[in-house]
Amino acid sequence: MKIESVFDAAFAPYGKVLPGYDTAELLAALEKYTPLPEGTDYVASQPELEALPIAAQLSANAYGGMPIELGWCNGHNTKLNCLEYHRDSELNCGNDDFILLVARADDIAGGVLDTGKVRAFRCPRGVMLEVYATTLHYAPCSASKGAGFRVMIGLPRGTNGPKPEITAINDEDKRLWACNKWLLAHAESGEAAQGAVVTLKGVNVDIADDI
Image 1 (cartoon, one colour):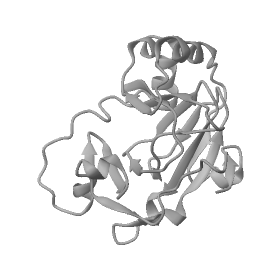
Image 2: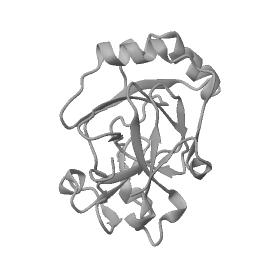
Image 3: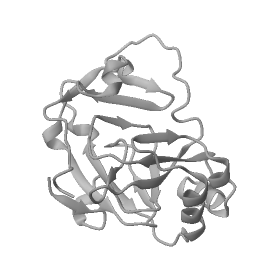
Image 4: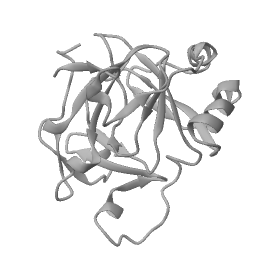
């Protein structure tokens, strides 16, 4: 798979780089307070990140005053496995270069996404990135062989919390996996084994040979 850059024009339908943020203190906190597992792990809200001045700045500026949470997704990964989306943009900022595997919500046809629609974009260390609500995404991927990543995840507060108890009234409702999180799973994923609806068809993308 071709690895493109978030600075390329090709990334414009998926998100944008947010200039002007001083991320040095955030990167130091990611290094100090968050682990680097062999697999991948996610924490929605990390107090040490949310205590930083940039947290209030992102809430006020990037989200227009909405309450947000700053957490992280760290580890080592090269596979797609799933895609998710939220009703709001997500902010990412990595202590290491990382790669996002993404597709567009309007690529979903008949409730199914062909993984041939997935593209890969590399984001450099320290860049504040907005991933649009209409962009399907999931755990970051390593940017080079054997490398890990520590990536801040900024979202409206409560996102990825407990799934609300609902009565499904349409097919999208069946994909609701957590609070403000809709999931498309590949049959090979652990999430599918846990009951997630299998809606990714095609190869489970793996960029191990492309980095």
